[in-house]
Length: 151
Ligand SMILES: [Zn+2]
Image (cartoon, rainbow, N blue to C red):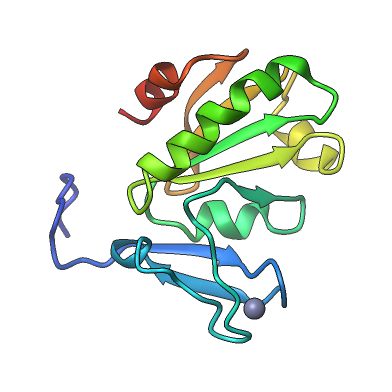
């Protein structure tokens, strides 16, 4: 088993997400993330080029079931700095399509997960690699700093 980063190797990397329509779980080949993936059950488009909304129920399965890095933007609707950072998070999802899974979690709606990761200030951005926290940034940061977290 090679542990070195092997871009373009034959080893498939999967993204695990839930369909926003029928809630069925889908495993998507990360190399085909830009090919307009659709839910295997209902055919609804799975838009990986936008941040995927996680919640207490889906968080573990997405983070543990995704082979590429998963970035989670812990935010809340009332948070001004979160709104300021949102366009950068959107842009990151487009630019890193298939290379990283960009997600967001509403810390009010999913307080259990926010508590587990001891989110004290928002926005907080955490990058998970193979289910484990790799990097964390608290406070709104520009796109370049978000990219740095994935570097
Ligand atoms: Zn579906």
